[in-house]
Length: 338
Image 1 (cartoon, helix red, strand yellow):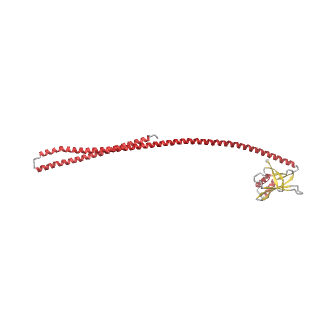
Image 2 (cartoon, rainbow, N blue to C red; image 1 turned 60 degrees about the horizontal axis):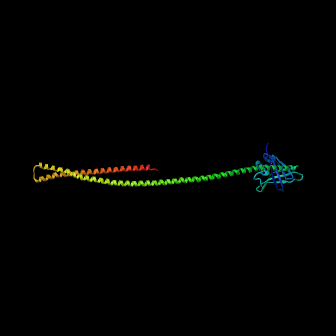
Image 3 (tube, rainbow, N blue to C red; image 1 turned 120 degrees about the vertical axis):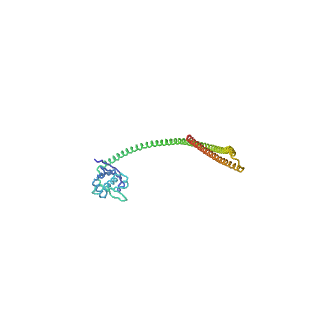
């Protein structure tokens, strides 16, 4: 069973501009299956019916698809839809002698060109008061439905307004909390940043003090090393001179006991002339001077070698000291508090 629908609207008829008409439409399913029209001016009433075959015939006559034609028909007769206003018009053909029927035609206006959608024959209703009562009842029912819908919409609107106010208050509370949290976090951040800056300044000061201390120690050690080198150089020079002096003395001491040896040789030799004695003296003394010269050269070479060994040992000892001090300085810097 199809659900029946009813529509009531006020229309204007071009041929009767001074009169107001009410159009009631009843149908089942959609207008393509047929509908009943009831027209009234508040005094009289007329009714007519359009069958499904009439709808199909009208669609074929204007060469329009049936679904599209049914849509335009619905907009023209019910007035429901944004495209209905100003696009459809109605015309009423008065009764003629010998023809007690009225004809209601409905047209579509498009680009200042109108074409007829359909026409229906209307017959006078014997009891127009009953039709008027039905129109008034339908109007009251429609008004009640609209009032209930309006009341429902008002309640929904109030509910939405309350929700909006609640959301607005919550948003304000969240914004206030966010701003408070940002101020708190910023103040904490400033404190932490200042502490870090103070710690960095303290570390820079300590690093500068350590660098100055290391530089002072380096200069002091350099001065100590220079003094040690000066003293070692002086010490290296003094033993060399004493050894040279002592060597010459030992040479003379070694040469002196050898001189008596020449006397026994001279005594053992047979007596000869003065020329032979002078030659023997020269022969005896020359080898002694050569031996003394060679001995002095050997002592000088040994003294130089000893001085060179002493310098090498001193340099080796200084390098070992410097290596130990550098290791101690690195260990001290590594163990210094950060």
